[in-house]
Image (tube, rainbow over all chains, first blue to last red; front, side, top):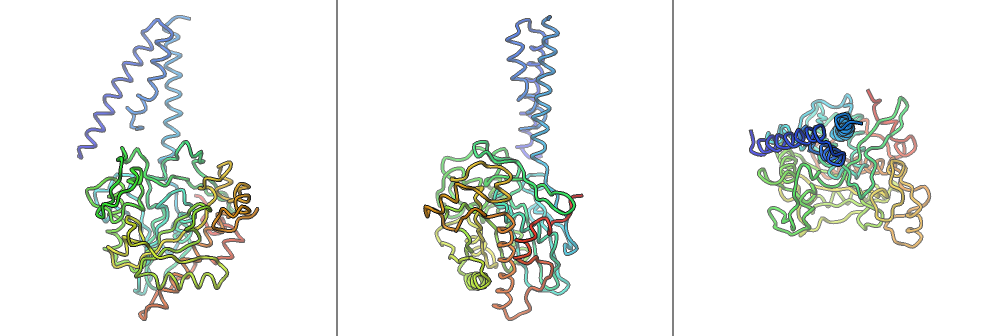
Length: 53
Length: 374
């Protein structure tokens, strides 16, 4: 396995963790602004986690 | 509304947006189908020549059209610059129609596959266009001139061509036609260039034709650019085309302009290297609305006005430069190049059938020479 593939998987893993944290924030926050902004930022991170660079 | 319900609604909306975006992204990665004709004897891939390309976007199909009798080999490159569509369509038509009796044709319709996976937002290009046919339309992707930055990033401030060290603007590091001869351990585009050049060496290619387009305000259009070893057959090709009423000129490959196919294939392989250019108004700075109609029909009022002001290097009237005419010009160039090679060489030359006639492509349209979508 090439080093760039390893880095890619690491990158996707970190993006997945961020997406999960953002999803948790959307569900657990009581402030609508926090929920909305976390929902918006969730989109690019979940795409990166799924390999859509 | 409680915070929990609101949260679920926002999250569901975000997932829906991500799904829609992801679907579009995936659609841009899909490779358009090519339906090989009876003349295709084998389909190889660039990874067969440079195994490290396996699994990368640089790996692209290589169509072999081998004659029963041995003879010379022509390497035909389309899609070096994916928005220069006449070269792509000409290569596809060769793969789907031609049968070789003597010699061999090697065709790469999507030379820089990565460039087909994106369009630059500020250029406002459509993602694809359709060619109507008798039994339905064929859809083709429209790409960009450079490698997708997702496959090669970041651009250097200054791109130093290998091995000449000639300096170019940084984004040209993603230009396949500035990357030859390439190197096996270089950037993505250099590795791709190295693979195409390796193919030419291993297959002992005799002639290379790299098919391009340029905008009508660019001086090098309706032109064949030839390496000095290919200048004789290039000139014979241009003369033969002009005798048929097809305006095509000849230009010598500059010796100090490195990285281009006509220069580096000629310097680094045994092949005689040439490049052809047709005029595409869909690429120009004067163009108006940029949509699939402009790509296919090649009509633009701005260019008609520019021609009246003598700002262009080709005639341009209301009939424009349709894609069918541009592809016909590329195919006629292939035909006359093969004739010129045969005339210039004493040994048995190319012999093939099924290459569409210039006038037939212009009048019947491209759909008549493309296989039905399956």
